[in-house]
Length: 385
Ligand code: PMP
Image (cartoon, rainbow, N blue to C red; front, top):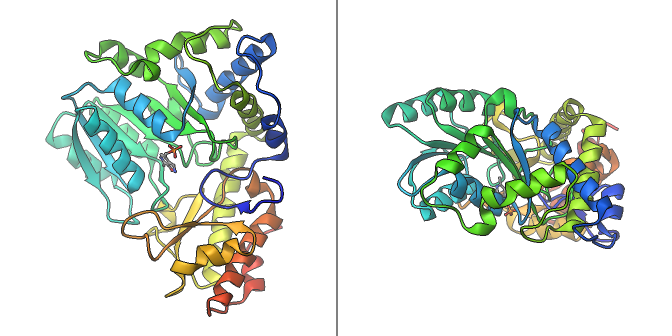
């Protein structure tokens, strides 16, 4: 919001001026020919951003990341089927909870806080029992841990399992190639690195996942059913109106602008920029006396930094930074809630070094107000102009 705080939380994120302008237009009719064309373009753009496999279907449904998770679970897994969750934090735990509600038999392969799961650990877990589907969280927003999706997905596929990736805090920022990685569902939401307002669940579903839906004995709730939505998405991509439930037309218009801006930059350039910005922001925060939660750079997300601030400052730091016009987030993971903070750096802000410097300065001055002085100018210089 213009004039509001700078959003450096891990979503919703600050929008580009073009997406902001598109979000303030009047929502069109879902049967307006111009809207049909826009929706079709958004779906085609998702194929490119995700690097969708041949025959996959992109879906845009009003909701968010949690809804996208429930769509994936209820369309791929029947009650009683075996599921394995690679657990790197709160959002992997949420996936396990959704699977349990579905009646699946859920096993977790849980990493200590700040660590990822090694390929060897997954291989071991899969060797014990046949698994129908494996669930990965590319970046868990509660720990800032990033996992190696291609390596883990290859092992899961090798064991004959379906593979679902929660990419809510990674799609459009972390390296992703759904086709090359053999992932069946990659899901996200509109409010993070995609760079649109909150309100949309976004998924790309492989032919194998569609076959799993057809083989289900217990169908999903109607509003989450791929069978309800796929004909609608196919119609919009083919330039025809279609109705199952009213789409969030205004949000789809903003989404299409956001996706177009991603493709104009090119995904490799976006991935490289997020990696550079993440290391610069963390270098700045470390100069201010913070320590990172993830165990190493190899497992650190490029979309957010989960950091331990200097002793005794975590409780008041979010408020002290907010008083300087920048919104950062407090700890979320139960083991980190009281002694960590989370700083998002994804999407449009990664093209705006002065906003990144403003963030580092707000954190530095916030820490100083809590009695921890550091060289704020040196920290700001970690951000390359
Ligand atoms: N998964 C991850 C990794 C997330 O970061 C989030 C949101 N922070 C979700 C799922 C849930 O998304 P939503 O809040 O849009 O339901």
